[in-house]
Length: 408
Image (cartoon, rainbow, N blue to C red; front, side, top):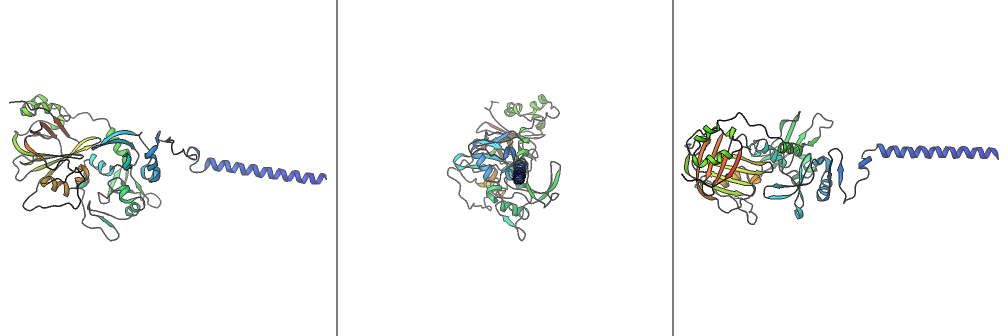
């Protein structure tokens, strides 16, 4: 009897020890497994999902979109709170992420920002200025609308991760670029930058931190102005109708002093766009001298979250030879630009950056133009608006000033 009791006691001890070991293993797995800890208990659908790495949280429609469309690999961590921003002619809730910007358009849903195009624009590298191609190599696809090809490994990543809806069309060909100390092959798309990280195992394609890069540019402190200019002397050389506006120019030091007498009563036209303005001057390119033969010029002014930017185009529209027609119709209340505006808008793909025209016809009138050391000032008489353009290689050097003309 005593021997049986001893055997039973040993058996119970062995069983208790085994149960204790099993319990410890379960606890260790729960603590050490990937996604454990704070992420192991996901917040409910109506609760914020917060990230200690950045101190920011996701909630509502933005959180749902983030979770259903790639999460960290596509958007990265949130780096801002939800805040109201104005983007073009739309104002609404926006949240920034490491790799993109999400915009809550209400009934239209949550959309990704076109940060690939926007970052290039902020850097003074308009995507329309990159070399284009007229076909794609075998095994690749061709985006006719932007005239760029898309090949592996970027093609496979693009197809598997959401295609046009997620990333947009390619806006450059692949090329070698250095980004924050890393150098490799990249390709820009409307909404992202794809990077081939050949230095990593399996050579993965990763999405660049465009959200972080753009936000850093937009929030960077302003640089101190360049060497001071003799403003009184410059002001005396500025024609009287432009003097008040000249004193309001934020980049006067870069604009410098006048280098030419003014050209007055030049035919001009202005066309308001969804996300900017187009300005046409009939008599020469003011950067080359107003007597330049056939130098009609068009300025495109873009409204961006970081302020205004501009680009300059020569107008070679010939109504006797040039004909164009868009295969797509404009939305209700929006219009296709005509003439020289239309040719530039179509051929340079400005329609993606400026949107549709807000008016069926441009406003025609006359302008006074004066060239400066670092740019040009244009007074459009019909509206009393002064357009100031700086160095074409510095697209942020642009300002629009409204004032009433003085007599004399």
